[in-house]
Structure formats: structure tokens, C-alpha cells
Length: 268
Image 1 (cartoon, rainbow, N blue to C red):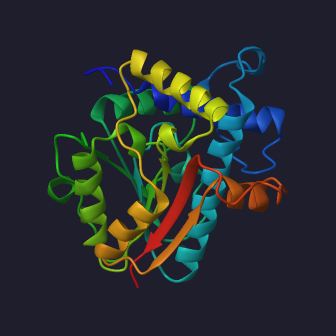
Image 2 (tube, helix red, strand yellow):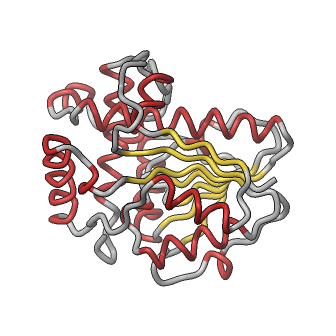
């Protein structure tokens, strides 16, 4: 992203969340603020609705993350850290008593978001705080102060980080006692059949043209080995087949289908 400018991919993800509410009626993931925070007429959003595959993937990753978050809160976790928050609205829909939500993002994107909140009349609860961090240039350890176990929501960020940026952040998370994290990642286009590879490469080229290229890919066995090496002992990884079966009533997707993954990892 450009210095002094909000993330354009953060805005794109917000549009996916909003159009899911309008076109699929939030059947996978309900977010009553998704349309409102954009401040655009529904007709305008629908006239240029993003493609369905990416839209429902984004809805599924939020559903997965928020189901895992609810389970963590039931276990007693009282801190939620939203990394690369963009226009995410978890903090403003927080219905859990005594749960603190910390949004971490690039300062330019945070300033833009707070303008959107003010302009659309979405109140900032006292349980919300903001920490400005450039993941590639600053350390979370220097900026983020936590008190006890935390649940990290890290969506739509990992592919845009360098491998060094990813390693620094996941190492920090693994050092938080009782930590749990949900993030999504992409497999390399080289693992895709020709038609899927072409679509992925087209999207990668599109985000590269706006200055936010995909930089990091993982394969499932590779990321599992790294996480276990950092002490995460409970790992749940949903690739296209498991995601389709769980959220789209599609048990017919071949189990080795490559694509986007959503993953939950916890240190017990």
C-alpha cells in the first residue's frame, strides 16, 4: 500500500462482505454493519458486485474466525486482537461482556477507518483500542501490550506480507501464553489446474497493479510444520474441499483441490 493512503484491498474485502449481505442475505456470515460502514447506496454496491467465489470465501473465513472466537471466549479469553483490521466490524458488533478488542493496522488505514465510522454513525465502544503498526517495518512486541491469553484474527493479510513479515508476526503470536490465531493463506498458483491457475494469476496481477502484490504462499504441510515448530499443538486447516462441505453443502469437491485456506492454530 502507498504511504498516506488506506489499503485498497481492505476496501475490496469490505465490499465483498457487504455484497454477501445483499446477494446471499448473509447466509454464511452475518454482519449488520458491513453495508453501512462503506457509506455507499446498495444499488451502487450491487451494480459492481465482486465475483461470487471470492465473496463467499471471504464470508466463510469470517464465519470460521468468529465461530472460533466465540469458543475462545467461552473458555475464558478476554482479549481479541484484529491484525490488519481494515474495515472489519468485529469490534463494533462485540456482544461479549468484558472482552477487550484491539485493532492493529497501518496508521493510514486506521485513520481512514475512523473517518468511515464517524461519517456512518457507527459508535466506537469503550472496549476498543487502536494500535498503529507497519507489519514490515515495526515489531508487534514494541507496540502491543497484552494482559493474558489473546485470540488473534488475522484475515486477508498473510499473502501480502513478505516471508520475513509473516515470520515476525507469527513468532510474536506464538510467544503470547495461551494464544490462538485464525488466518487465511494461499497455495502457490503452480499447484493449480490450468483454469484455476489462470484465475489466480489474474487476481494476483490485479492487486499487484494497485501496489499490494501477493508475496507469500504456503502449502498445507509446510505451514503445519512451521506452526508446530513454534509450539502450536491444535491446528485446524480448511482447504477448498473442507470449506465447501462445511459452509456450502458441497461434499463433492475433491479433497486434494488446491486454493485458499483458512487455518486456526492454538497453543495449549
